[in-house]
Length: 446
Ligand SMILES: Cc1cc2nc3c(=O)[nH]c(=O)nc-3n(C[C@H](O)[C@H](O)[C@H](O)COP(=O)(O)OP(=O)(O)OC[C@H]3O[C@@H](n4cnc5c(N)ncnc54)[C@H](O)[C@@H]3O)c2cc1C
Image (cartoon, rainbow, N blue to C red; front, side, top):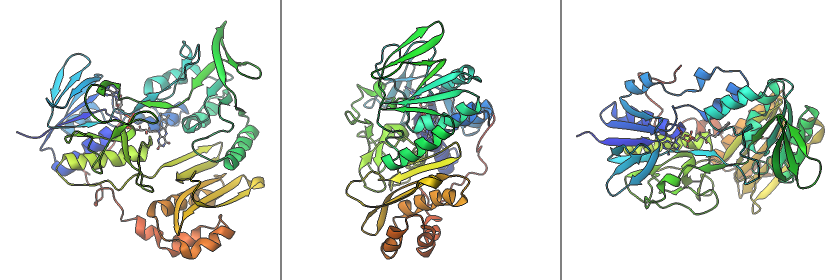
């Protein structure tokens, strides 16, 4: 009997696992996909909001392409309970699916704080396609949009909201914007830039209550004036979709980011149950510590590693690099690795007149974290984003370059070239080989 693989969740991690299984076994096994939603990429939803792509371009697989991959689909169904002893999953309609091995890739959802009125009608999150459709319908020219939360997700949709002609205010409880992505110096530059581009920013502000008055939302705050809004978008963090595993016996982390505990092959505490993407506490490439990295590259890499292991290979995961890259009003902002490490040797440089910021963090000769900000029109800013990512990712020895970089953290290209970093990075692949499925569907239109 062919091996029965069960993939739970049809997002980035789930789809990458399916694709990799098929790269490895060319259709020899049975694959069943259970997914609450049709497969699509959440990461491209901001481009849909900004009207630079059509809705059909967000999908990563169609029924036809999944059929070509010989995948049996149960789309629109939710996993409700896992019984690892019986190797069986029960769905929300009572259907039972048996498996030989399975992948949990149910991702995350938007979380809202317990603010009175924060879950009423007319308040939005921006995480799923359905939520994106609602925001698209609501954000029209001249409307006052208030975004609660100045984190990475807010920033991914900022350009799109402005491009729809709305007036934008961002409210953040922390004393600065992007508190989990950049440091205070960088945040100050970005805040100044956004203010000059017409975005109102209010930091250190706690929203205490949201009420509706004749179609307008009023956001009451702890100190200062209440804020009126036509549209409120709550971008106040995410939570993993793991509640349905409560009685499964699978080991999960308590508190913090939570997540399923996994080994270096991304196996959970149950040997034939894997976890990948936002739900998995995989290895951090720099520190080796188990962590949830709720970002697209991690979901892709996890998916490929699990897919290969499910197909019978023996692939250990080297770990994922924490990274956030975003562009707002033509300002590039990025941070890589351990950018907030108090134990590191830190070199920073700022050119406030040019909105340029650099931060390099070292342990010995190794660059373990980096931060960059600068106008996208300065072509070297965009180049340096890639260079810094490459240097942190490769872990190359930069000892000979440290004194130069300490004097001028902006001048990183010579170190990148002299250490032959491009040559080190190019052959690096997650599975020890390039992706190899030209005959299989790659991407699709609905
Ligand atoms: C607006 C936005 C912009 C983003 N931009 C970036 C970016 O620029 N860079 C970046 O690195 N990351 C970005 N991300 C984050 C990135 O999209 C996620 O980290 C990534 O999608 C995680 O992949 P995943 O497969 O773990 O989960 P998901 O892609 O969330 O997929 C989870 C799947 O599981 C399904 N599911 C959930 N519960 C169940 C259940 N009980 N039963 C069955 N199915 C279930 C869901 O319907 C979904 O299909 C962005 C996210 C958003 C929302």
